[in-house]
Length: 283
Image (cartoon, rainbow, N blue to C red; front, side):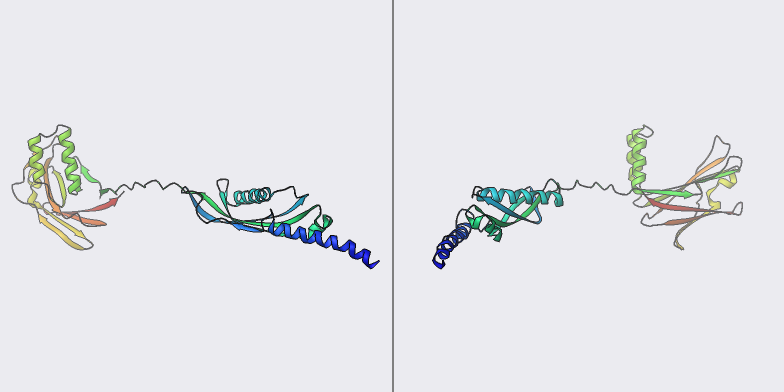
């Protein structure tokens, strides 16, 4: 009886041993790896993904390449779920080992069960370079408050401030519109200041009051006086269609300031004071 049992067990042990040996060293590779590196220059590394599969290889019909393809397909699906449909995988390592479930297959005589695992690197398309952001330089404008004081019956003030660039642009526009000749343009351009210019146009019903010497102009920035001028004699004045006497005065003031300028105009003829705010705005 013992001899009969031994005769039965010996073939079984041989089959088990053969099955294990075949899995580890035969057509079913236990592990292999691929060299690292990008999928292509158009892709960049995003991470790793792991896949695992228990394969029932009946009658040894499923080749190692088929089993590996199943793992890679699973890894590709996992990568798509996690990283998006544009993801590509690159197999890095594959491992496989014999599973005790192989005993179900009549101790390996009808096939075997393999527990396999795969690690793949995930690659995503390199995003296109960002479009260059065109940053337009901030422009500057000067706002006057109040914008103007105008009483057509008795008097008015019109205040204007422009920096050098704005003065040049205004001169160019006059030339383009045919308001000045090329020779006048050159003359005026030569007289442009390298700083800002404050212009004051005033009108008075009385000729004697339109004389500029009656007016004193004071400009302050942050409480510090940057300009104090009294109108000079012999400034030409004209009689306007509004039946007021007009006069124009201008003073050069550095444009390298921020915030506000406070302009005060004192009319000593009428003993009045007029206050204006020049606001520098960037937009």
